[in-house]
Length: 232
Image 1: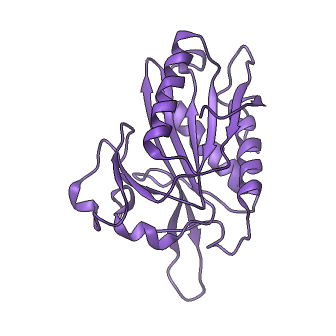
Image 2: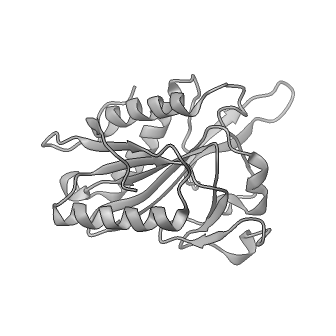
């Protein structure tokens, strides 16, 4: 398990909330931005919000029009986060991360590395070796098939934004989404590699089990958490 690399010196716990029903993208972004503003103003605690979205595509600040292969398949939402096109939908755990980097060192690169370490720690619970690949965003796994060239597939995406040193947006981990839904885009602008999930790797992981692994991994990297209600 990773050691704490991005914790608060004051030890203040992060609120940890899980929504049981799917949340629409625009409603989630509105709630997330409001919470980030309240964190900046000192009227709310940091928050990690776990949820699922209905099927949709999001376009990050670096997205290219030609990477949207099937424009009419699902709703497409412009997103203020970094990165390119991503898919969100049932079976994928989205974790929106609203942390105050003023209390965590004001280091954006260290923050992204901490997010990567968090995902890798969670995957390790299921004996999956998550990897960081130079020049590619997110967390990857390598599948080795006898007689074939190793296949590198993306299992988790990262896309964050900072406003006044408070983060929002976050990560997405593929637990059991419909992988065919990724065919409508070039995920994160990378066409030469595939997308996978925990279940696609042959692991019958439930969303509850994934959530527990994410919680343990987050605590190891970012520090203590406490259970809280979702913002909406």
